[in-house]
Amino acid sequence: MMTGDLRQDTETPQVPRGWRGWKNHQVLRRDMPLHELLVTIILIVVVWVADVFVVRPAYDRDYFTVQRSVRAQKANCRDMVVDYQAPGLYMVSTCGRKRLYRVHGKKVVLLSDVPDEVGTCPKKH
Amino acid sequence: MSEKALSIRAVVGAPPRLMQYILEKWRKALLRPHFFHSVLLALVLFYFAISFMLNCARYAETYPYTPRIHDFLLNLLPVVDMNAFATFGIELFIWTFYLMTLIFFPERFAFVIKTFAVFKIARGLALVMTHLGPPLCMLEDGYPGSTFGGMFFTKDLFFSGHTGYPILAAVLFWDIPWMRWIGLTVGLMLGFSTLLMHDHYTIDVFGAIVTTPVAYFISRWLFTTDYLAGVDPYRPVVRQVE
Image 1 (cartoon, rainbow over the protein chains, first blue to last red):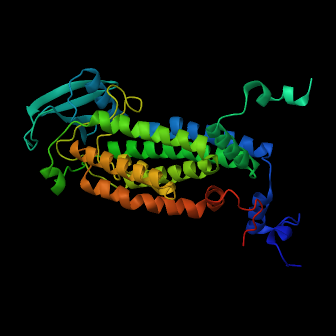
Image 2: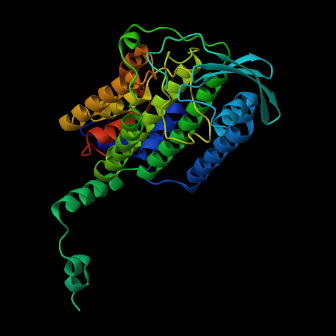
Image 3: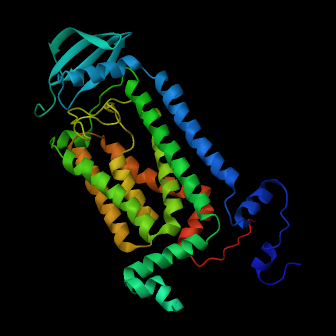
């Protein structure tokens, strides 16, 4: 019988079935069951494993090899941009120069080094 | 020995007013149903959102043939190195904001974290859909040395996080005037500093201002229970879904 305060009616233990029933059950519950904590921990592990072992290796390794190598050689200024040219070939624009690199495994080889013709910046960094 | 002598208050004295306020806030927050449940799920979502956004940024970074285009406002602005202000400013603001929410507004913590997660997921999707090179004359921002495990994001990042995060904080605490104005001011200042460094196109900064409230309302729609818990701590504990 729906009379008076709504809270009195919602405190009844009868939980209807379906989506709304599950939602109401979730709202009415006051504790956190152990299985939800376990599911939470499993979710964190699944996301981490998928991130590290599945998603990241799917990206272009060579791109980041070039980026890391150029930075390790300190051959860059703070305006460095790496651009893909062809498989294994990357153009690095920085310090007013355009440098072409070829990737060999985890190492890079400088193929050409020419001045950058963009020249629109007010000052060189 | 009397009961009073054994109590903590008898030993250390009554807690100061600020501590009383915090303890009362936490007491009320912990009385609510599944508080920990909500916070834990918020942290899971947050972790997933960070991972998602970083992978989207990696994808956008390696995308080939991204053009660099002119921007009306950037062509007028000089290139100024604001890295210290922009990088440490956003980090200081964000972590102060999280910590302050956790201490003083525990009832809002889950909703705040979930909203930031929604914002990060929206940003990740926007990054994937934007294939632009960086603005001309870009000055790299970030910590000197290594960022994101040696990965630097040099392509255009639509929309601006420097603008978006403080404005999202302002939107989340819109009912508290000083937090609202601090968030809006910091967001606009950091947004302008990234423009001075030519790290973002102008549309990135304005896009963040438009997108942030949308992310907030999506989060409010998705996580209504958490939102209501933060809005009215005296709301009845039991609620029936219509």
